Amino acid sequence: MRYRTGRVAGILRQGLLQAAALAAALMLVPMTAHASTADYIPRYLDIRTPEHLRGVPIDRQQRDCLAQALYHEARGETELGRIAVAQVILNRVRAKVYPDTICGVVYENRHMKNRCQFSFACDGISDRPREARSWRSAVRLANGILCIGGCARRAASPEIERLTQGLKSATHYHATYVSPRWARAKKRVGKVGLHIFYRSDRVARTMPAPY
Image (cartoon, rainbow, N blue to C red; front, side):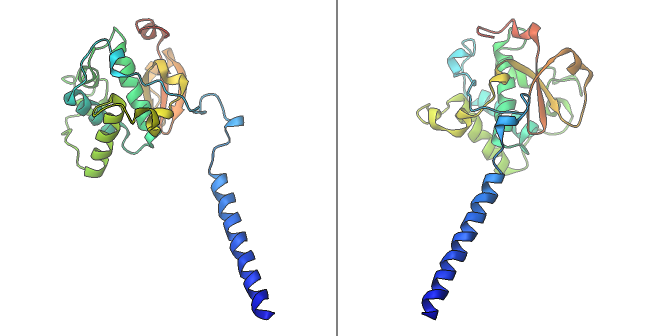
């Protein structure tokens, strides 16, 4: 009887530990019902497939340019944060006021020190990735976004299922720890990780519908 009692107590303790672990895990899930509009990220995809990129061919050079931007601009971010940065780049490709290739957008004004569109492109520091693991991750994500290697997996991949609808016309962003003057003239549309994203109505009007 003593043995059975001890065994039952052990089972109960195990059950309590599992319940506590489950409760702790649930505490990590964001409660979106009361989240602010700016910070709530619904499960929505708006990264367009290559045929929507104004007829621009998507090759490995364009993939590498996107991967470079993901690596240098957002490698410390979550997958969702990196996807948000990619969304801005692809939105600019679609906008007529920006270059019509990914490489053109990423490296626009690269010859103007500290005045380019993405700071890593004109800071005078080598763009060669030094963190192999982060670089491989950036390349993998860029491949998934651009359908390089086929789109069969695309519909089921996590990076395709999570992106805020508010970023579908975002063309600007900055880190949360800076306050650039240009942001005053833009409409804030969301915050993902350490980046705040904005829409420019002037730029959005040059994008294909439904922007």
